[in-house]
Image 1 (cartoon, rainbow, N blue to C red):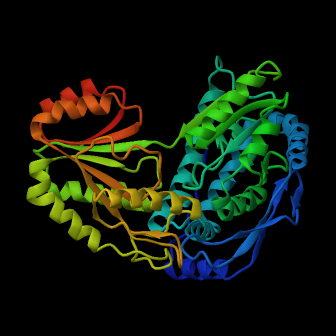
Image 2 (tube, rainbow, N blue to C red):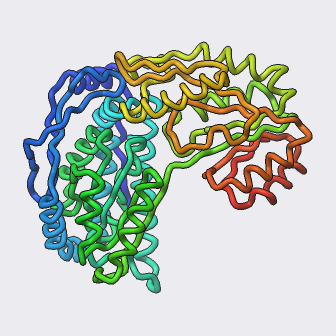
Length: 455
């Protein structure tokens, strides 16, 4: 299938102009249900996390009645969308790709920078590159499925609920589900509504029919109480805290015999990731990995490093000094200033949770550097390093610019591997080691984890 992406040339001047226009506007974000934009009048402020006194607009909260209306409308158009030829559905999403890379590139970047406090490097990688590539991959995979005569396309006899978190735009909704002919009720995080609103605009212009993707501005409790108890519930995709993950699973289990079909569930929770360093490795490379892994986007990603296991000799000789010097050189502030490496955490709730943890660490006298929390202008927390000999010290699910350094004696290497293997908190991990025989041993011991190796 031929397709020519009309990628827009990046311009800092133009991006800053759009950023300033959006930052100084007063936007009203409605719900998108069927062919309507619904402004309920129940309004909530929208403010940039890095400038929490600046109101840039409002979003309109929906009701349980809106959920029912969205379900009914989506089911009424589902058959027509499914009966549309696969090539026609693909052509619509190729238009979405062109719009993201072309005329809407700067607008998506600006919305991500303002609403989610991402610096330009992160925003460009997320709302343009990954979002575009993700869509292209979905299109390619869907195309391969349709070419396989013995495979049945994934069409759900009902609607799918998509619940998304603030930290990425490229996984906003399950595009592959829509491409395959299904309908979606999308409940985004309150802190990603600027990008969600821009994406809905793109979907409309690209030609996605009304009611195929419905944007609901309703809290998760209401969306699960109504959506997940409906007979036509066909599935859910979710990314967020494990407590909400468990609530969703419990709800599906309770109503499983009420559904007209067995629903699918795609879930991803936040977790913790580690960095394990062998004594043979280079201090400068490890310090760079810690900076990027722990502090990029303020540690608010599932891949962020929460704890690093460092051999005592390497830490004392060079690494500690190098890491402190690099952290002191980092600039913190608004993403509008492209020289800033650190911006704010996402909201007040997150800020207070991190602050409380830091205060506990401070009372234990474990903070090596950082620990300053200031919400007078925005929700800013300086990059924080906690040094400890307690390997269980930092084991909470928390998105933050905080990393714990656990110092171990070299002879305890195997004990550290045992500790990591028997933890149920880690999603991924990175191993820094130049000895290939040791790496081979690590692969065997930690076979249950998704690992990255650095030689």
